[in-house]
Structures are given as structure tokens and as C-alpha cells.
Image (cartoon, rainbow, N blue to C red; front, side, top):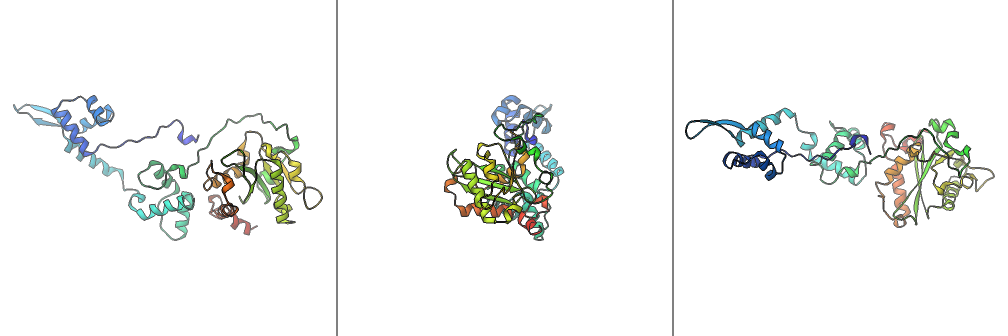
Length: 348
């Protein structure tokens, strides 16, 4: 779970209205109800009622000329309105409904992050005085955006304990461990080092998406294959090699996978189908260390914006998958000063 949300309950506190204050005045002054009774009637805490009565307490002259304390809804409301003036100006989002609707459309239909939306508006010449974090906070708080909620933009992270002792799967040779991957790949010093994984659909059986993410540019390649099987993964690699020809050996220097059974045939994935020898080098991350393939994991989460978990991938067209791939490769990224992967490829 994200550290910002640890052990927190959602808060839905609402201020007392003037109508509720008039009810408190009647119950307290005339009916002589206790604070506990009033709190139950209004579904508020007893502490809230006690503080409210203290805020609106006034001294009035009784029928026989004696002074007594009573609660005044009007006095309390005036104090409440005055205290609100110290909160500062309203948020820009509260005042600009057109901006709110534009942000909703970009997040809901175009799957863009708040940071990217703000940056694109700035590039178009709009004087935006809000940040992506402001938009995220407003969505989480609720009350401004009607069409979206935090589930549309927030991805909950799960953190595993960092084991000092890391093991390599017994199904692969030790030299295929990520520990033997060249420094050019580890430090992102050159183009051509990829991370790979599968995006699973609704069922354990059926079509899946084989995804590749380049570590320097975050370029994405998505291939629809028939299932979680070594044979289908090797066939997809053969298809890529035939597609790129001689460019394949420059484009795919190394590929790093997890320890899934579908990726264990490293000999088949390394062996070229159009020339003698190997076409690339395969490496494996440590078990239960998905962060070692974080680049691919992040791009897979972007795919989930279009293909949520539980979706039947068999029914998704190759054309739609290609559109998602193009969308990712043209998506502005903050880490690249809002350049896309395709823009970086042109600079290679």
C-alpha cells in the first residue's frame, strides 16, 4: 500500500448548516435536551455539539429579570461565516467549470495523467496556476469532478520486504541472472536493452499480451499471443526478428524477463531463426523482485488504462492493441521534459 495512505480511514466530515443550528437552538433552549441526545439526532459527535453550543452561547435576560445562558443559531452562524474568511481564496477549480470539464475529458477519454494535462495546457499558452498534485488532491477529496474518481488515476502500490538474500530460479543457469547483465543495460547507457512480461486477461487460458519496454526511451512493443506458453513466446520473437531483419540485432541487445514458466526457454528465445548463432541475450530478474523490471511494469499499468484487469483479451482486435502501443509511444513523459518515446527515437 502506498505510504501516503497507510492505515488511514476516509474522512467525510461536513460542517453544520444553519438549518441544523436552528434545530440545536430549539432542542437545547426549549426542550432541554442533552448534548448526547442532540448528537444522536443530528448524527454528529457529542464533541461537535458541545463546541457548537459553546460558539453560539449568549447571555439573555429572563422573564423575571435574571440573566441566563442560551444558544443562538444566528450568532453561531455569523461566527462561522466570519471564520471562513480566513481560509483564503477559493481554488481555481472551484471557479472554472470549463477547466474542470476539460480535465475530466482528458483523464477519462484520453487516459492522460494530471501532470501531462497541465503541461499541455501551458504549451498551448494557457496561464495555469494549478499543478498535477492539485488535481489529484481535488479528485481524491471529491465534490469538484463528477465524471472521475481516484480509481481512474491512482495506482495502488504494494511494497514487499527487501530480502538481502536473493535467489536465482533453479530452472535457469546462473549466468542468466540479472547480476550478469552488462552495465550498459543496468545504467541505461545505450539503446537496445529491453524488459518483457505478459499482460493477462480474464482467464488463465486464452490470449495474452506479450509486452516489451526499452529501458532508455521507454519504447513499447505489444504482441497478442495465444497463451502463456514457451512456444508462443518464441514464435513472437521469431516474428519480430523477421519484421526488423538486420535491425533486430541492434534493436534487441538484451531482454530481461521475470521467472515465469513461460519465459524459461531462453535458448529458444536467443537462437536466431534467419541466421546462424544467437539474435539477442536473455536475462532474468530475481524472484519476487518486480522492481528490477520496473520500466516494463510501469508501461503495463498504462496498458491497463485501456484494458482493465478481467478483460477478455481474445475479443480485443490487433488494431486496437496497435492503437494502445502508439498511444504509449506518443505519450508525453515528465522524466523526458514531456517528450514522448517516439520523439526520443528520432534523436537516436
